[in-house]
Length: 435
Ligand SMILES: [Zn+2]
Image (cartoon, rainbow, N blue to C red; front, side, top):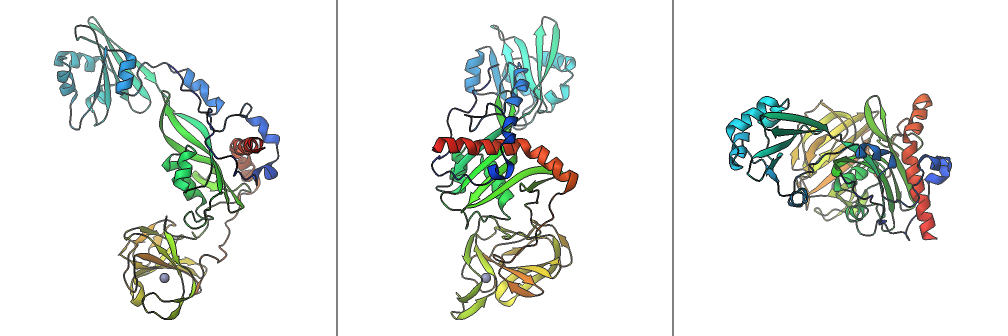
């Protein structure tokens, strides 16, 4: 089996805008030794994942017309339709029910053959007379089964195809949008979403991101048989936003995966600054001419314009204090977060499932954007209250979560060191490239 070429040929980022703040100063240069040979590879599979690939020798790649022509005319590929049975597939290929039964009897993977699902792929190798030589199919995500017919005997072979986690690095500069520039850097939309989610406590990706902001992401991709089969987690990332340097590293504690900055402080705050994704800040906190009433009035919250039905999340863990209708605010919800803090959400088109007194977790959907009450268009009116008094949620100092300490912090530094080294080296590369 051929390995795909490493993806190191084309750096996919804009060099000249690169900002070099941050990590190097924090972490020193000793870590460079961890990833030798990284020098010219901006987006390359980590070398340590290669041996697993080389040990695989499986003849059947995922099915496509191109694969078929590559493998030769003897192979017939069948993609199972909804409700199609193995018997129907055999009939379609002119193969007998008796042969099918013999194969089923001989196979230890019988269940995988009987319980076909829509989209599943089967490969049949036929000889010149249309007789079956080999049947190949997958058993679960990691096993490929081959049944070979040799006269009256049937031989079964099962090859294990482990899902391989490859470590990749992508880097880019914002010039149009997070999505466009992330995609240009080689990130999947899932990975871009993950990055936005990881940094959302500190960066408002709709309002704060500017041209010239830069990002670097070390992430996993799942591969099988030399083919990308999905995206994994982000392991580490940096984001330079308007001159401020943010870092994030994946770390597991107490069985839960969380993201921490390089000092070991959790990125997840007790309260999200913005309880809605990808909405536009349409009105800030303070005095303004009321859009409906037409006179100057204090605006005691911030407004986020978003399409009707956009989910609204609880900004933090807490208890539902109010669900109901209030004059100007229409359908609204208030969540009590303890220590005198609460958040209030107005103009909803619909409430979530939670009732007054119920516990909500940060990120739970408590309602949907609408324009009930006094509103000129669909938006979320969001208030942050301290002891019942509204304060500006965009400038209020959020309580900082406790950082990792002691042995746990040491474990954090050890487990995140490879990702740190990759980010550091990418920054060094760019510095060399810019010169
Ligand atoms: Zn408002």
